[in-house]
Length: 386
Image 1: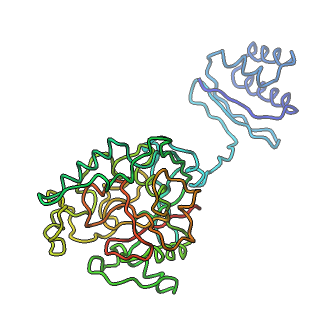
Image 2 (image 1 turned 60 degrees about the vertical axis):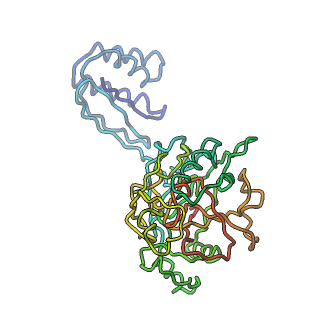
């Protein structure tokens, strides 16, 4: 049964009730019903409440059109037992901006549908507000050690202290509350970085045989150069916490795409890498995998490796600079590790690279480098808060 709800000013109630009375009488001739309504109204009850009190319990078909009175109020809401023809005055529906939508915290990865937007020719994905525990549990550290061992040859071994810097502190944990922000969908490409150089706002980087085309990620870039580029785009580097949240989400996935390693979803040191002359001395190779590339891949080459927010290449291709100083957990962005004035101490790198193996591709894995260091496997992506 459909219902008709009418929004009105109290001063208009009598005129509106009389209009409804006249329409019902003309259409159905149900004098008894209308008389009951009028009786109810005459008792002093609010006219529309009284009208509904009589009409709703009576399951009869109502098909009518009511034009709103000449007042500055919306007339609206109807429900009838048959297909009712009702003229409604639509109320404007508030439209939330993407950032307003993202300000509503999510508690599960599945609760978020990726949103993208272009800023100055660069596609960015929206990361919603939420909470997660940053780092790895003791059990996850054990699993990371086992993953590393699988990629080691007979002459190599893995060390637990390689990953213990990501261990969640036993006292107090490492819970983080993240505000919404925009994140580059991919790593910054050579073409995008070249535009900043052409504008006179960025320095040239050293040439590299491991990234040569416009669509490959810029590499051999220092922390200072990455910071300058993001500033030119009205952005900044992500904090270490923001980066990990965008990769893992509130579900705290091990890899950006889930909890199981898949060598087809990221550019890493696979069989192609292992066969390359430059990797001949590598003792850690995922020989059984084939990601399709020997060195860096064009950004976005692994759509199935997208994170829960739609960010691509969060594992592999190139390590990504963050704004954070490399310090022990728990992470606290208010206690100095986001201090820009420190221009000498190591900064955190995340995401691993084309020469990394499965253990490093875990989204909790931490790397570091001094801010002036360059490497064929060092790149970055930017964020913006509005």
